Structure formats: structure tokens, C-alpha cells
Amino acid sequence: MSGPFSILYFAWLRERVGVAEETLTPPDTVTTVADLVVYLASLDQRHAAAFKDRETVRCAVNQEFADAMTVLRPDDEVAFFPPVTGG
Image 1: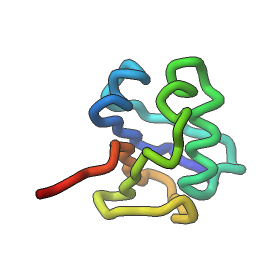
Image 2 (image 1 turned 180 degrees about the horizontal axis):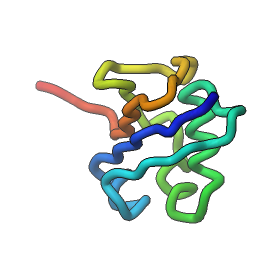
Image 3 (image 1 turned 90 degrees about the vertical axis):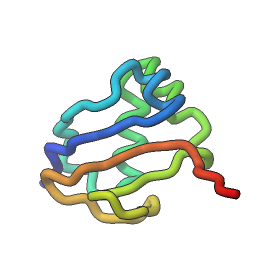
Image 4 (image 1 turned 90 degrees about the horizontal axis):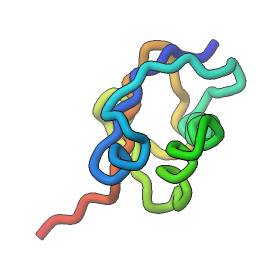
């Protein structure tokens, strides 16, 4: 069973998608972060532009870093953001 998921976008991802946050209920086939990214990229041109270079997009699920194979559960908060650099 998929979502609903609260999806947050930060930095240039927010600018490309056009919103900072949205709640979506994807199809039941969306079970991992990778599945969600594919689904989001298929929604429209804005989402496709945000996820065009997927290697540069980082993710957190419920405020913990996540990778592409992280399993999603209904009501998860999924955040997408660019790589963070420190110094």
C-alpha cells in the first residue's frame, strides 16, 4: 500500500517543481524511494526537470538520510534536496 506521502522539496528542486511541499498518493507499485522518484518524474515537465539528473538529488525519509532502496510506508515524510557540502 502506497502513501499518502508528504513530499518536501528544497533549494533548486523546489524552484523546478514550483512548490515547497505536496501530499501525494502514488500507485501501489511505488514502494521505495527509487520508485517514488520515477513516479514523480512522470507527473509533469516540472517534476521531470527536478529529477532529470537523479544522481545529484539526495533524500531523507522522516528526517533521516535515505537511499534509493529505502522502503516507504504510508504517511512518511520524504524530502528531496541537493548535495550538502561542508567546510
